[in-house]
Length: 346
Image (cartoon, rainbow, N blue to C red; front, side):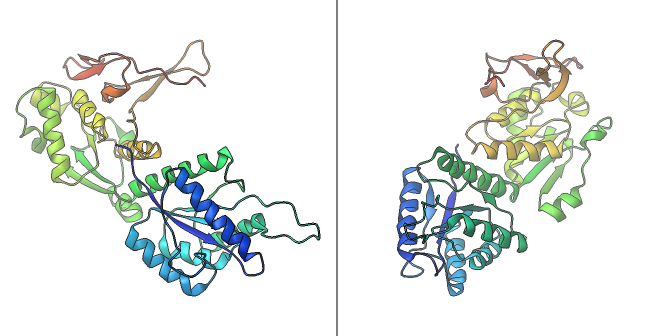
C-alpha cells in the first residue's frame, strides 16, 4: 500500500521586502501543492497573514504540527524569509526540512527588487547548518517547472524514509550462521544510536508452531511472530539448523512475507533488513524490493552483473511464475527460482 505523508507548509517572509508579493506567492504555492495532491497543514490560523516572520509564532506552529502529526516541513520563502525563526522551528520539530522559494522576477524599472528569494534561501541554509539541522534544498524555480513537482514528491519520499528509519523493529530469528561474519551487527549500538530495536528469538520458537514441513506453514508462523513482537521486518538464520528441524529451506516463506510488505532477509543480515525497509520507503512503499547478492560480473558487458540468491524475493518481481526448487548449495526444497522482470536499461 502506498505510504501517506503529511507535510507542514511554512511560508515565510521578511519585513524589508514586499509583503503583498509574499502573500501572493503564499497562496500560489498552496494552490500548486493542492494540484499536486500533497496533503499539507497550513498556518493560516497562526497570524493574519499565514506567514512565519515573528519569533512568537514558532511555538504555536510547532504545537499545531505536532498535533497534526506532520512528517516534514516545507520552508517556502515567499520573499527573502526570516532565517532565524525558520531555523528555530526546524530545530524544535526535528523533522525533515525542504528549503525552497519561487524564482525571482527581473528587478523593477527603478531597480527595486520585490523578494530576493534566492538570497534568503542561502541565508536560511547557512543558519540551518549552524543549528545542525539537515535539510533538502530544492532548486529556486517556478511553481510550474517540472523540477518543482519532482522535488516535492522526492521530499515526500525522504519523509517516508526518515519516518520508517525512526520506527524499525526487526524480528531476529536465530543467530547469524557461523560462516557469515559479514552479517554480524552490534545490537547495542543500533539501539543507542538509532533506536533500531531487535526482537531476537531462538529458532525453536519459530519451528514450534508449524511442525508441518510446508512453506505456507512456515510463512504463517513467521507472520504470527512478526505480529507478536510488533516488528516491521525480519532476518532469519536460513541454514542449516532449520533444514534439520523441518527439512525445507525458508526462502519461499521469506518471499511470501516480502510480498506482503514485510521484508525478511537471509543469513540473519540485520543491516540488510534495515536497508530493505528503507529501499521500499524510498519508493513510497508502492513496490517491493528484492534482496540479492552481487555474484559475478558479466563476461562481456562491463555494465552487467548477475544478481542471485536462494529465492527470498517477492513473487511480484518475477517475470514468470516462480518454481519451488532447491538452492545451489543445498538438497532441501523451499527456494524459489525465477527470472526477475526487466527494468529500464542504464
